Length: 160
Image 1 (cartoon, helix red, strand yellow):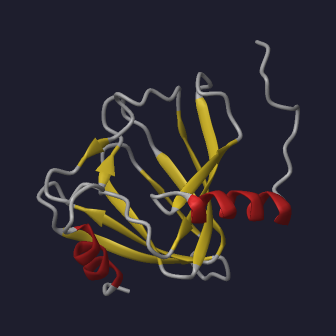
Image 2: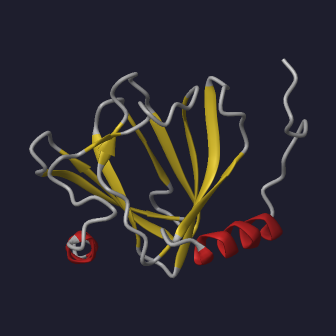
């Protein structure tokens, strides 16, 4: 297989700064930097978030995909939900510990909130990436386009 990516990629301060600039300029207030080709079976990327980003609760069910998050800089609140939207667990993830990351099974509704000015997270999950099946959005959580998302985001942040 011939990939267009280099044989190695370093995770550096300059890369973090570059992706953070993209996140700040993005209407969604976050940006990804992929280390993989979309067709690869293991997807790995940086997810750079700013304080005001909202990520609708979702799961990776069909096809089932486990997912791993590791905080490299900053802090995140990670929330796991039941099928009905009830909160099953909350976890404070921080680059200084004591909890640095989380690995979740396929099919678990989850979201994360940025609790620091910005946060840099390394994510890994099964591929290949298909935008039509990657996420199953929770019907009980506001969409990113919904005007109630800001209030919901603030409620989620208060859990931490």
